Length: 278
Image: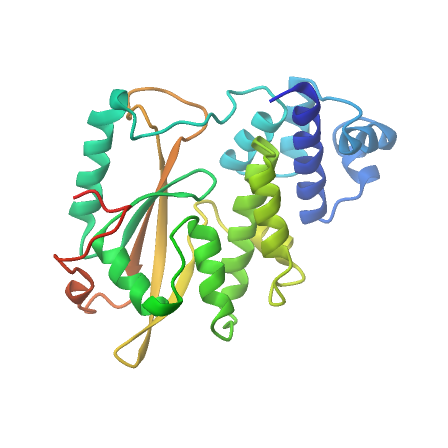
């Protein structure tokens, strides 16, 4: 990432969080002992913050730790996100560990994706759940978990519960822009923002969501709407003993709200898919 991209990424992040917190440039300047014109220059990408100023900005915007790390990354003060491929030979041991994780997660649907939400691996239970969400005749190749969930929402009348879910998903894409600002991320955000059912106050809803950002989806199973809650954890491509300030991969597991719901029918031993590796 070059210096110009770094400045634009930070500018994008700063304006997003200031707007989400309903803070004017003047108020933010007052809180961090700066000038409104300097905040304006930061948001235009014409200036860059120091580490000390970043500390004051993060405090003034009341950022959670994860969002604070993303803000620092966007300003170039932490290791950037790199393109890595778990299928390379040097990651064979780590790949086998993650495959085992997916297999042991069954009958709960689970996926592994990169930080941009692109699918890396799935388990059989996820394939079964996806078949219930989207008829096979209408399924597109699995590429991005975020766009897949938005596509699912688009095919159903969005429930009020979707408001926070869609807002959190949009925030995930937004965070990618602050760290990487790739054409693919820009295209995805533009595509999602064009959907007619995005909450008008999605920034506020996403900012108010507790750390962890789990969200719910509703799926019709045997004529009944069942709610699944997602639990997301970050993990390193090189394993838990290698420190990294940003994650390489995300594991997402879908747990049903009703403990007694039988999920075994989702697991078809005969299922096959390019993203299924066992």
